[in-house]
Image (cartoon, rainbow, N blue to C red; front, side, top):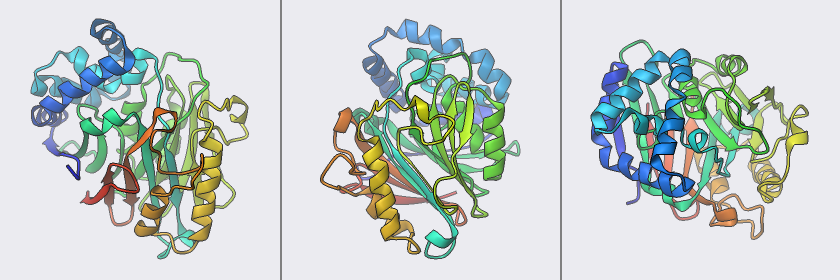
Length: 341
C-alpha cells in the first residue's frame, strides 16, 4: 500500500468513537497486539494501568472520554483496551521515538505563509497500524485531519483554523501522575491559535516529556518543551523558524539532555543546514526534500534503523490552506497524499 487507510467520522463524541471503532476494528486489534509485543507486559497489567487514567482524562476532557467509550463499543473491545490505545507509553512506562520537526514562517517561506512538518521515527511495525483520521464533531469543536494509529484519538494534524501540532520525543524524565500525551495533543487540535496552545500547555501537567512544534493559519509558530515539572518555550535563533530533534534546547531544560539518542544533536545541525540552504524558498516540495535527506552520517533526517528507529511516516501542514500532507514510508522512497480539512 502506498497510503494509509482513511477513517472519517462525524457527529457526537460517542458517535465519532463508535464510527472509528467500527471502521478500524481489525487495525485496532493489530495495534493492541503490537503494544503487547512492544512492551513485553501482560495485557491485564496494561489494561489495569490504562484504566487508572480514566478519572484524569475525564476531568480534562469529558468529550475525549465519551469518544473512547464509543471507540470500545464500535470495535467490540473492552473499555480498558480502548484506554490502552490512548495511554500506550504511560501504561507501560516505556518511552520511544525519534523524530525531526520544524516550522517555518514569513521570511523563510516562498509565499510568507507558515509551513510545518516532521518525520515520524518509530519501530517499523507502527507503519502497519497507521491511519489518517478525519473528525467532524457536531458539538462546536473544530474539524480536523490527523495522522494517528488505529484507535488512538490524538496525534499529529491540522484543524479548520489552520492550527497544527507536531512532536519530538524527549527523554531523561521521571514518570509522574498527570495527563497522557495523546489526549493533550487532541486538545491542541481543538484550539484556534498557537497562543491558545501555549496557554493550554502551561495549564496542564503531563506524565512524561515531549517537545511540541506548533503553527497556525495566521502564520504564528512556536516550540514548547514539556516536562512533568512544567514547560519552556524555545525561541530558536531566528524569529521565523523553530527546529527541534530529541534533546533539550531551552535554557531551562538543557541540563536534562543525556544523549539517549546520540544522533539527535547532529540531526538538528543537519536540519539547520538544510533549512538555511532553502531559506526564503521553503514550501511543500522543499520540506519533502529535507525529510528525505541522507547526509551519509549520523545526522541524516530520514532514518533507516538508527537506534532501531525508522521514518515510518512524514507529515507536512499548510496551515493557511488547511491541508495535511501525509507520507507512508521513508522520506526517500515513500508516497505522499494530501488531505484537506
